[in-house]
Image 1: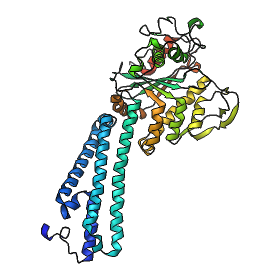
Image 2: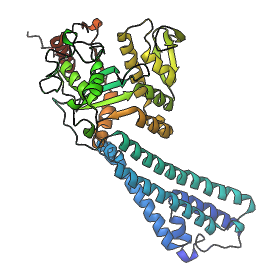
Image 3: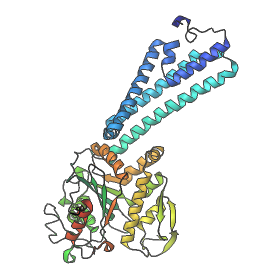
Image 4: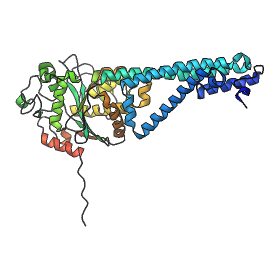
Length: 454
């Protein structure tokens, strides 16, 4: 059959059954191959535009999928670049508008008044439903891309990336706990995460906030004031001479020790804590992440809560004296909203700081488990709004793709936890830092078993 004889382009307008079948075909073609309906039965120029855009989109999807299979870090890197995200948003808006134009033009070509009356509603409904789904999805994709671009720009810096040291990336995680009853912020949760740059194998090192005599390397600005360790002989510039006081002292009393901190996306107090963590662990720490524990509540609510196994009843305090109990979080599996998750991590009544460290790690792991693509995308606006208020870091935006890919490997491997607590042979009030560094080195590079000779 020649194109001149095609019932799609030159139908018998007097036959309602033919016009009805033609209408279904045109709508189906517009859904499956946008632009094809116009190429066969309408404006060829519009059809070529639609077909070209459709084929270009299919090609991009195939290339992205193949690249993700072969080198996923490349896809993650592009998807976390602000310029690329804006280009994606612009392209998504273009496709959304184009599909609206093609759909209404297809309905014009169908000529509903010539079809069987009983089929008119179905043909129109199918065309409009597909348009809403496709164009609406593209418009939402544009919104997510622009929101993600703003979120990434507000949280992550534009600085240079750091290379791995001894094949590992070491990140300092600080959980800040500012409050009306204290001057400044004191990190109540302090942890170093060491990640193998190739395999993603991770070791977490929990640092008690009450560690004393914290050593500083010779390169640290703190070394001159505290050559024997922070708070040695009870000497420091704040009321309590322990690890988490270092942030407060430097931030409030001597920020001039780290004059370049703010320009580099950090704070003097954070840099002092980095130096302290390096002195304790013997590791070079490339990046830090500071999480505002109060704002953490908002992030958990945005994710829809977290599920944890509560080993025993945990109290929620009625006031900041931590002596009066308002309610209890009962033992057993509990799905906690932000308020209860924060109290589960902070609770002090009838417990120790080491119990708190274990609960904080439990909450961190639960949040990571909730951070899957479906959950984040479905609540992206709330998650992005909370994240921009909760997180401060010096991880450069250019490294996000690499770290997202590495995190995927980490999730597949067991995480080794090295808590520097009395149960692990560490006395925070009289720590043996040589033994601590040896313990960490053993966790990072487990000794191999020599085969028996025989």
